[in-house]
Image 1 (spheres, rainbow, N blue to C red):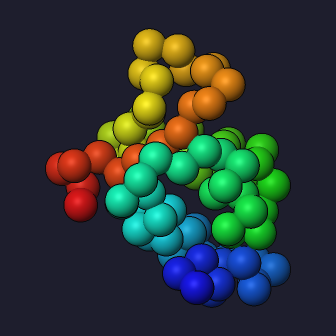
Image 2: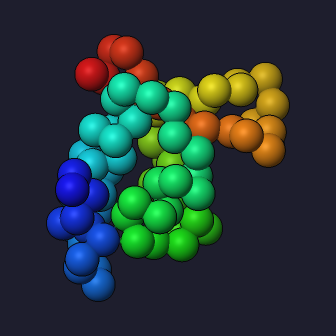
Length: 82
């Protein structure tokens, strides 16, 4: 339900997508696959345009920061951004 405004649009405002990702990741770590399914976007699009920049901006934190390419890598909203 939270991701419906993005999933149902062909093109969504970038800031809206970021806001929804922050909200989706606020309670639990979510893997890229889950985010892409919820948002109705390809994993590559989510990774390239949202997750990587948001990790760099410290909006999201990694479940496995010591292994960036971990097969079960997941993302959670940074505490300071909640």
